Image 1 (cartoon, rainbow, N blue to C red):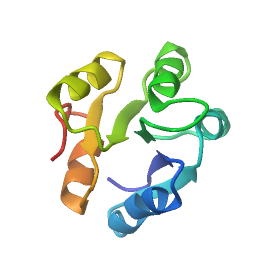
Image 2 (image 1 turned 180 degrees about the vertical axis):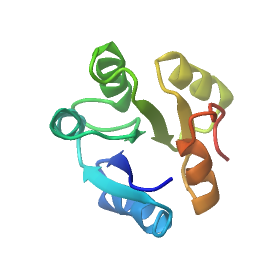
Image 3 (image 1 turned 90 degrees about the vertical axis):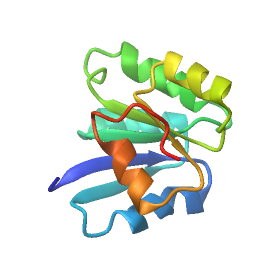
Length: 126
C-alpha cells in the first residue's frame, strides 16, 4: 500500500485532517478539499486512488460529486467512499445506490478507515 493517494473532502477542517493523522505511516498520502467543486478541481489536476467524500456539504452535496465522478470517463474507475454520520440502514442503502463504493461512518478510527479504503470493502465500516 505504498504511495497511494487519498483525497479527503469535507467542509469541516477537523474532519479533513483526521484521516491524514490516522493514516500516518500506512503508505497513504492524504490531500484535502473543502468543497465539492474543490474536489472536482483536484481530481482533474492530479491522480488519486480513492476519494473520501462527505455527504452533507453546502452548495454541492457529496452525492452530487459522486455522480459526477462516476459519470466521467476519466474518473469512473476511482474508488469513492462516503464519509458520513448517517448511520441508519435505509440512509446507507440510498448512499450506496447513488454510486458510492463504500461507506465510512463517523466517528472513525484507523481500523475502519483502512478497511473502507480497500477495494474489496463495500459494507459500511462501523
